[in-house]
Image (cartoon, rainbow, N blue to C red; front, top):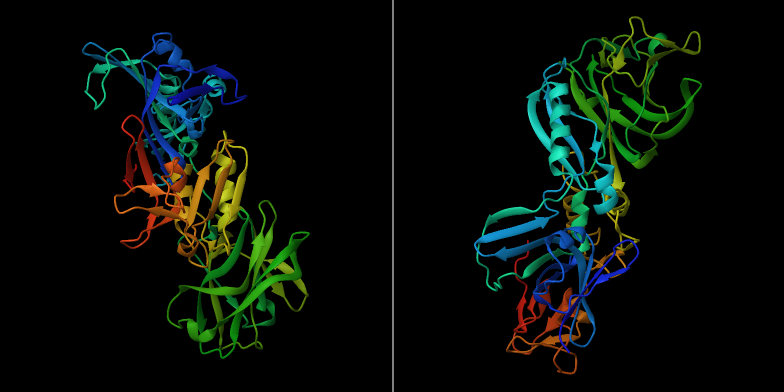
Length: 496
């Protein structure tokens, strides 16, 4: 028997075709993707370039001569050489969901980055899946950026057959079709990561001050706020200084809302020593909460500031404010002891404040998969002690890059991770195996062997494993390339 190739409908596994004349030229795997890339040569003339275009994005499976499934992924690109011309069609430049980032010349803040709404070609998405592209337009008007988005969508929503000069390759068969395939992990790169906002708050140029603890009318102040993303917030910061030489501390706490006022039910609190404040100038100062506090989107909360000592008209605290009241997601109140009530400040203002949040590593991974895993079935993770990390922001990165960043960080026990997408399109991530558990072997000549010294017939099964050697240090196999025609194997090659 020889190697064989199947093409299946990715949605229902319906058999599309099994070109008997298709031969895998090169197959690669790594410990991040599982199957990574495949190059397949098909000499059959039963399908033309248009037929192959309809199969872009579909499920490709490669079987070894013993019928074992060796490689699986999707069809990314097809090319054919006819004389001196090179025909190609593929998914690389397809974008059926498009947005444009720009600096709005019509905005009062022209240096801020704006983004158009996403525009979609639903018909293309129904055929190929959602493939996003985020274009950059520099400084321009909103209407121009929206026009650019429409043009880019019209130009790139569908894969087009292109002609170009012939560039010879190692194996070049005139008239044959060359199928370039990618592992399913690659499709995470089809979606743009929307990002999480690690910081909630208001920090424009200071315009105003508020005293705390110099009279019964200013024992406490409070600022309500909303968060953009549900995170565990562990750091509170304000812009402040001290007046005189107070010997107590400034207390910062978070509370729930009750009818537009602080509820009195604390979620977390911490003290800021007066020694950390300047008596000459305002500066940003922060405290770390003993335990992170989970805050949810759309729910109002309050940041409370008070001194933990008695009233002192000579030694007290001053907070930086924004009397322009540019913060639209909350209100600033002062607690008046004499009336035992929270009252609005006159003139109105907003506190200058920042809250910084973190998120569990595995939770952020799940969010990336929920965003980009349109072709995946399940996410299975065995991470050990997961890290608590600052969330990855909205920097225009695709989800594949974000997921790779998260996996490279390992866990709290400093374990590294392996991952793959299996034939059922379940994304699995687990801790890299220990050297002590190594069973496979590598011979002095570089052959992969079973624990009993027999040749390893399915060498791709060794990726992500330690290989014991009788003549050298053990080798961790992070990647492998197999050329089925010659049976040549490359261990730990650099894969893009």
